Length: 57
Image (cartoon, rainbow, N blue to C red):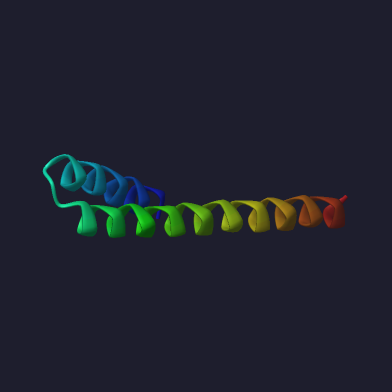
């Protein structure tokens, strides 16, 4: 999913540089949303892994 966010970011920057500001901004907005979803999932799985590790010992 992080690859997808980076792809949207790069496409948004390229489109913005070529003069397609509206669609480029939309692509960057999608990239931001995906990035924050990835960060949230990372934190959730990190907490779950720490709690599972404590349950085993």
